[in-house]
Length: 163
Image (tube, rainbow, N blue to C red):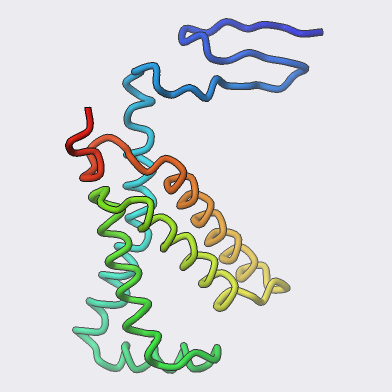
């Protein structure tokens, strides 16, 4: 039995105990306008904090940390040259995403990077903690792909000049 449930926005209905939502976000609703911005900011902070604090700040205040990071990369079969490359991807990608400049590129870059991190560093799926970390990075990749699908959001540099 089909049951139509009306809501204030008129965008949701129930069909056989499942909820379906109208995907048309162009109706000018205030919350819908800022959902992309909120998603962009939440995803950007993941790599901005990791890149700036865990890698840049720690490496500047404690050079042994950077050497340890390079050794850790070596333990998983990556050359030490990956260390500055990874830091660059994290910081630049996160800043681009944060300000909404070249958002689609930044989202694809960080999605690929997230999958890389999941598969290279968290591949011991027999260990529950590693499995969880792998799934978390894959979830971040999914969020990045959602941003890449709809890259122009409120309060973004990509949105300047658009009506």
